[in-house]
Image 1: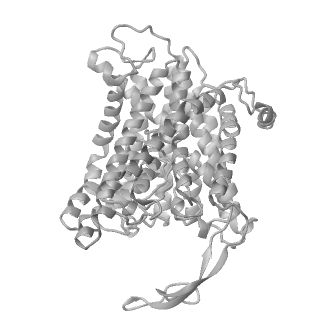
Image 2: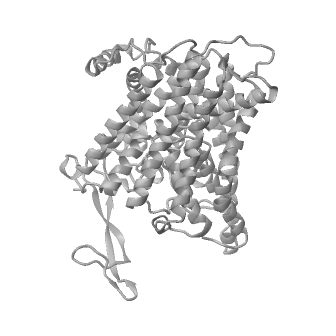
Image 3: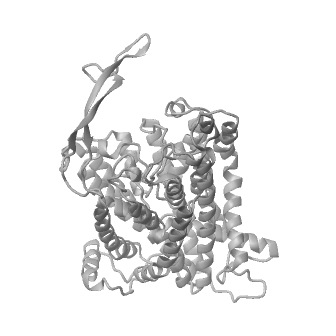
Length: 598
């Protein structure tokens, strides 16, 4: 923890504060169907053409049921589109490496992963996906799943801001405007910047280079059919001399831009943002982290602007910021202190825990990136979370379990945090013995029920799937570690899937029919099991009348509200997931202090 690292943290916070208001104002115009932007002369004709092709009347708004139905149908159709491409990959163009089609279970998992904005990867991108699959099947969803998340947040905010209204906007209009006016323009500029930093973007076949020093490695012997040869002692090994190296090529920069800005996180290559072709410089690393938070942070300003209560928007932002800063501090401290067992073996304590980290990024940037990517539902990584210390790994795990409401994914962070806002004002109402109110609207039993349903679904699928995997042969077979760390690998996988994050404790081998299938349903329920109740909440709030504020009205801005909101997030998360965390990273920390590793 040196002065340079503190300065970088200060610069990151300062940059986030600076961009929040102007980007929030721009998003406010984008989410207004009649809003004007400086891109109108270029994009208005394209927008009108899109409505004509889709046969959409942009002036006609939808009820919450119609809005939700449109979202679900759109997601189902695009999911099938991606599944078809992945299953037919070997017959499609732009496949210079000749990659085969994906297996049914892997294609199922990947299609759901990208349509839910999770981008969980049970595969290595550079060894599995053709250029066509990367550009069409995956980047296509990087834009549209991000736009869908922002659209849901916009609809919920409209429901809060409106009164005695049956409609909350038009899904097709929101989806079109978010894609054209927000995501595409920024990503074009962002991709050009990434190319200037050294991120590749081409259609060349992979390059084969001769290594300077050939290496001899031991690999399993295979028969003519590619199956491992075994004997009574197990798999027969043979020595193989490695004299060449395959260097990945392809359209990388265009994917990384939306991967970060849309909080998608799926890497073009298996090493993700730790790979120099995805994240080559300290400046690219800094801006990738900043872009993960950019839209989520700006949407809190949009919340204040739309509800005509800017103090409320900044209070929500402040709650997110305090929890973000606390997570960074804990993760940074844990990784800086390292593992005492390594210190006993002669590893310098000052070096901290460098296992699984890029030397060019080091402890601080790895800790900051891990916190940012799991505060948001991004999942991109520049270090391997599986190699973090137990408490260092606890931070990203707990971040996801809060529902990723600390700035969060694009749209998902705001609508997730609004769950806790409703719960917080409900608790405040109980404490003063009156009907809870939120921005002039009474929070009634129906509103509380659908709000809690959204969170309970998340907790149920995380804990349910983890419990199933932990007692099943298929679940334990995928582990790279045993004991509490192995349990953490499973818990992290299903937490990441349900939270639509996509990062992993990478020691888990999840490319099996059982893991691909269960994680697929985990991601599906985590996304739409939360969205549907929240859309019902949006419809309910939009229909309500405004109640004049009184002496007993709980203010939803200021220090008291901010602290209550933080306490609600932490208490609900702790009470729900603390027993599972105690079986994983917490007990592993104490065992590490006793000299045990897993």
